[in-house]
Image (cartoon, rainbow over all chains, first blue to last red; front, top):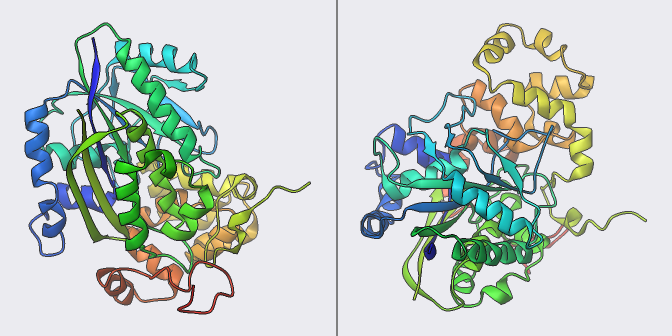
Length: 279
Length: 132
């Protein structure tokens, strides 16, 4: 049967993607950040996941104000990198897993999470930057990816609690799939950052490090954090961190922490990264 | 009964909620149109004429022409949509963020290198700076 073996969280700052695409990863500004992912690249090379459920948010690329689903799952065969205003990133197309995605949709909706099914959407930096950070620059991504898009652009996004419970529903769905698949769940976005208004540039190291610790060891408690606390403490865009709780909900209550990394800054943002394995 | 908005007292921050999305609908959809290269070229060739194709308010159009991002946000713009404008201009997120804080891009970049803007004194309106 299919099984969820591990979870990854990482920030998905667009400037990180640009640094990779433009060959700047060894520059003084960027080198310390990429050093934090060296272990991760080795680890994923050994893990060889078949499918990644990649939880991310669209940044007004595929979804405009015409349509803004709270939770959407990519059930299509392929997803192209989005043109976000300066041309698409030069990265491989993303190949989905329609069979598993359809199974997840049917299972999760019947667990009271009303996913929107999407067969055609372009995927932006929220999805492609984490792939680049973990896999580098291959000619094709080495595994299938099922995009799971969470609205965190239009307030209110789903609560942390709801995201955590979605993770648990995803776990049950994967566990009941009749294929022999090694599945990972990734939660992306964050950490503290604010991109708008006079308070732009907010970074909260104390909050971020507490969040990393609690995500590993107190996810139940962390899932109770209200939206306003994310925004007040971690900046208006720091609310992306609710997506990390989807990843955590899909793992065992007790996990093995394989890697933790925190770095400030990447452009406007604090970067956090965790690798957790089910025992 | 009005909705509870507990985030209204966060300083220097406009939360893009459903009310703001209603006010900014046409502004944000104009921004989305700039994801197409042809539209970017038409906008750059004559910004005013391109804006006049959209049922935006005059204040929204003027804020775009002025590249006044704080004003655009006041008028319902969301930063991820507005990003299409500064991307069209060939400018970075950090450049745009700096203009919203009143700092030069160099000053802003230095603040980020030094660890970013502290949350101390920046959590609540009228908060005494440095206290919490």
